[in-house]
Length: 279
Image (cartoon, rainbow, N blue to C red; front, side, top):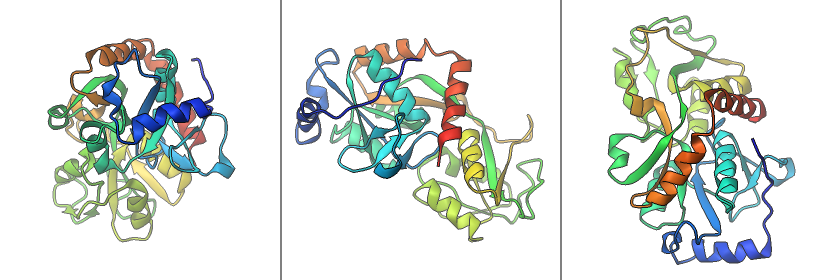
């Protein structure tokens, strides 16, 4: 896969000023745009995370309006798309609940590449590309938990379960029959801290996210269930896709064509790289 290192030149800032300060990015056609503004949390490793300037490296991309940088699987996909479209890539860090409004309402971003599932509810507001990753969902908990060693989602009666607000994770908690569905929290790092501190027993995450979490937090572990013992999840909830504004058919088709060039093996290799680099 071709790579490039983003350089913020004066010309690029001039283009970005128009896109991010009052005028919408959708006023120009895809062919006329020079800058592709991508929104993500930058707090959801290994899909995306934040690095301070002192720790930045070649793979990382500056986060607009900050001194920080972003990296992760989503960043690698965004870099590939921008390069193939011959556009300057700009990453904007946006809280999860603000991503779709930033795309549709304020039009501050052109794409959401943030580990987002293309659910039917979201598709009422945004358009989705074909999947760029397919996920398995697992349970994350402390290694010393009484629930460690469970083999089925029916083994968590009495457990205090917390998940991320506005995500499939929170929707899946009800499948843990007998578990206590706690009020969801805003982001994964906050959830992980709460589980480590013993405030909650466990959470639900996608497998690559769980792998990244456990690698950084050896006191935690995750349970991946065998077929028939895990979560009942539809394709739209297990797939991960890129969101863009409805009606931008040319951009949608262009991105789908780029994604089609990535084999399953290449996608898994990129994810493995992201897990290796994640903080």
